[in-house]
Length: 133
Image (cartoon, rainbow, N blue to C red; front, side):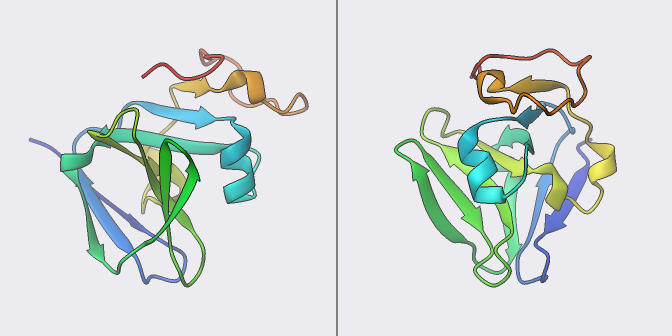
C-alpha cells in the first residue's frame, strides 16, 4: 500500500499530492538551484511523474536550462517541482514544500562539484560530482 504525501506553496494557492515511498532524496548543490531558490542548497525527492498531481492551482513554469522546466507559484514565488528532459518519466519535488518534510531526510548529495566550500551539511552522506540518472 502506497502512502499519500501532500504539500504546497507558502501562500496556499498551489497544492500537490503524490503516492509512494519517500526515497531517492538528495541535497542539490548546483548553481542553478541556488539562484532560483535563493538558498545554499535545495533538497529534492524524485518520484514517478505518474504518481504526482497538482490538486489546487496551476503553477507557473520557468525553463532554467535547455533540459529543465521548473514549476513555481505565480503568487508567492515558491519553487515546488521540476522536470528534466533527461528523465521525463520522473518529477523532482522540493522537500521543503512537503507538509511533513521531517519525514524525508536526504540520502545523498548531488552536484558536489558546485558545492559552496564553506557549506558543511550532512557530510556522512555519499556525494556525486554531478548527478547520476
